[in-house]
Image: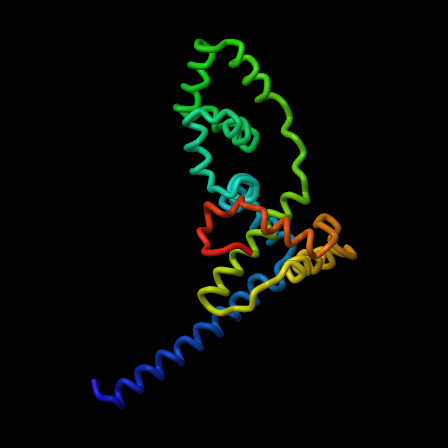
Length: 207
C-alpha cells in the first residue's frame, strides 16, 4: 500500500467513525431523550433490568461483590449471607448445596437450625440510606480514580461528588441531598474509610 493509499484509508476510517458517532447520537436522542412514561415502564419491566435492580445492584452496593461471589460464600455455609440472599430472592434456598447445608444443620444442631429458620422468616432490618449513598459515593470515587490514572481525567474531590447527589435531588424537585455527612471533611473521611469496593477494584492508592 502506498503512502497516498494509506492516507486515503485513514481518512475514510476517521470519516466512518464520525458518521457512526452521529448515527449513535441521533439514535440515542430519538430513543431515550423523549422517552414516554409507558416506554420507561416497559424498559424497567425487562427481566434483565429487574434482575439488576433486585439482585445485582444490592449485592454490589451493600457487599461490594457480585451475586456469584456471595452465592459461593452461601454454599460454603455462611449463614448471614444465606439469610441476606434469601431476603433478596428466597429461591436461593432451593440451591442444592445450600439446601443440603440447612438439612444437615437440622440433624447436627437442631437448636441452631430452629433459630436459623426463624431468622429466615424475620423481616430484614431497614437499610441506612446514608450508608447506601456512601457506598455509591465511594464507587464514584474509585471509578474516577481509574479514569484519572489511565486517561488523565480530572480528579473529583468529596464536595464535587456530593454535588452529583445534590444535582440528582434537585432534578427530582428537592432542594438538596441531606443524607450524606454535612461537612466536606466528614464526607471525605467516610469515603476514604469505606473498603467495600477494595476487593472489586484493586487500586494503587486510596481516595
